[in-house]
Amino acid sequence: MEGTKILVVDDESRMRKLVKDFLVKENFSVLEAQDGEQAVDIFMSTKDISLIILDVMMPKLDGYGVAEEIRKISKVPIIMLTAKSSERDEIHGFELGIDEYITKPFSPKILVARVQAVLRRSMSGQEENTISCGGINMDISAHKVMVDNEEIELSYKEFELLNYFLVNQGVALSREKILNNVWNYDYFGDARTIDTHVKKLRSKLGSKGDYIKTIWGMGYKFEV
Image (tube, rainbow, N blue to C red; front, top):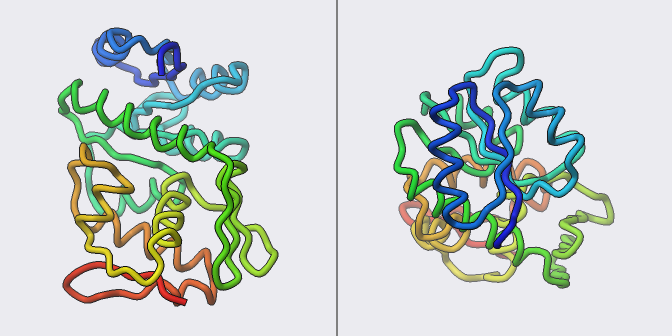
């Protein structure tokens, strides 16, 4: 991951410096933006950004507005920094394709661990591979999903979750196991994160969403 380019977006210069210093220690290349409009401009003019760390509350254009603009053209992983952690805010972010939430104040070491985990999943997803099941076809290398020969748009995390379900067809998966494998061991969240993503994934899969069975008190199972 050495030299991997990350865009850090925050209107507080001290916060940008804190995050940048820890990322640079891990040999990441860091770009900075001090408001939402500048973030969009930098992303549009720099084509090899691998991940965005994005604050919610910013002048000119807030984090959600930035995410909405970027999602029009890219599925680049986005980690959102927020002082708010209400369920409504998180759901809104997930609907826009946010991959991770980190609530302020946070440990910079945890942030770096999350960055590394997201990038590992992103890079492993570039391996050439296809999975087909029950009218669902996943092209892993192209990050493309077809349902009954019609393409559907999934966020990075929804794509990873569907991939995990397809690879583990017929297996009862606890929420803890899903967190450990899709969000990785360094994710400090709760079950509602999974439930929110499952709800969105079911909706996007249409009738195929019924393949994702709820196992009450435990988790989920993908079964055709």
